[in-house]
Image (tube, rainbow, N blue to C red; front, side, top):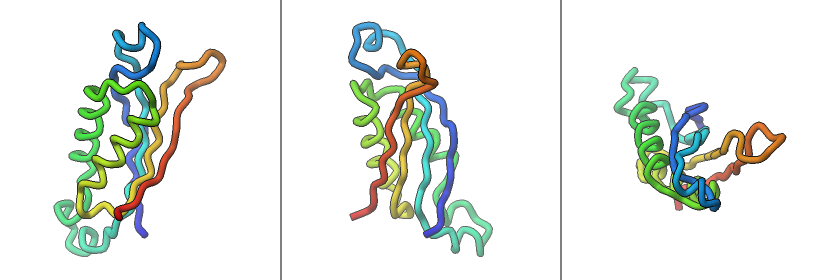
Length: 117
């Protein structure tokens, strides 16, 4: 399966369980691997025949900045579900991290993989 990589998407949104996290937007770092068949987009040299990176990135940022989730786990599931609404996406690997969330760690987060049913 071919893979489209979208790395280091930076969004700012409400995420977390502590009082200050429910008020102050935080950095959210997102990485995606979209599993798809790129052969038609490649042979026709036409992005409209494949997963559009720009559109996907914009949708993910909009979701991350408005979801107001308590956990990175829930946000990762939301993002996976969103990307899989694209009929050309057969699967998705999503990594969501909160930089600086835990003292002495660069970031904390989760990585999930979901497939079209």
